[in-house]
Length: 451
Image 1 (tube, helix red, strand yellow):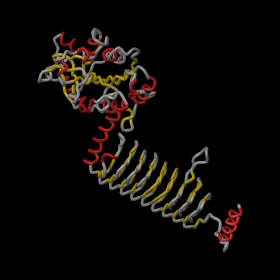
Image 2 (tube, one colour):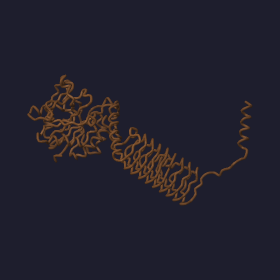
Image 3 (tube, rainbow, N blue to C red):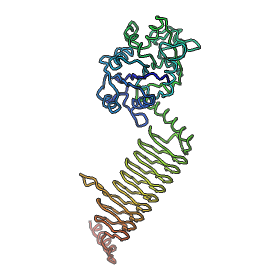
Image 4 (cartoon, rainbow, N blue to C red):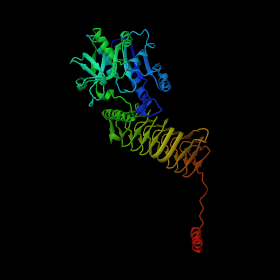
């Protein structure tokens, strides 16, 4: 990088009508995070001094999303084109003497590396007035075209609506992303007119205005997948799929075994250790950390959870936020954990709910056990000590504590604390009445026959 201050202007004023949603287009999630926040996260790695998001329709939603990040919001009351949108950031960047990246909130996958290349090209020896990020899609369609020589020097840029038949044959397209010196950007924008087929103020026109002043601009290229725009739910699904495919490849390159890669879905912040095995149809929500040598069996869902080294999850397990599994612990089929800690070596192999609980090392939770943590108004804590054994089909009514090494007999409903190494047996004594079942059947058959 050049050492000059950097600002980013992110355009997010479009209505996003093709989404057919009450949620603003740039806030639709990609890998569990709003697409706008994906982009701002990449920008943040360049340490900009200013971030400005230009909003229009749905501005309240966008402002609420970016406020915690210290992002300045500029308002475009009327959508009069991309050039007009960038001009709305003028006040926020008054007196700024650095480089400006112009980005789009619905183009979320642009990498920090590509942004750096744009800035570095802006300060190359030929000192271009602007740097345009171009790409070559498989179907150029209605994208604006960039007419440039082999060195990347731009001769002209033209919107598809205004392009000639010959210009439409060019495959190098304009992504809309640009890098411009802040000292020159707004002066150029104020000269942009709207004498075109759409009657809009186009951002790319600053390239031709600079050329008229005797200063050429340059284009650098990137892959079409990096600048994929999202305007509909279908396009969102396509970009999601592309993101997931890259993340799966990265996971396997980092030492993770994916038994059926296409069926595993990651979140933007999923962290996996080495020698992790993930079976088919596993879904990671946000906030999951998995240590080394973990096996996650098929059809499990994890969110906001921490899984310790050598642990085993599933199949058909659900780990909700606050679930922590210690080293070597196990949860099996149809086990759900929420805000619960399962100590090292502890296990709950099937049909169990552990909520607001702390389970000690080596404890064994039998099938059908639940921690009754909610009374309809408040949540309460259950503590199960190290080495404790909870028999099948037990209900532990919180707040309650089971001591280290204690045994809770199967079918118990525990409402009071159980001391260490004690046996808790909470069920009526079993009784048997010889011949009662046969007599009952005989009486009922007789009644039925009499009808």
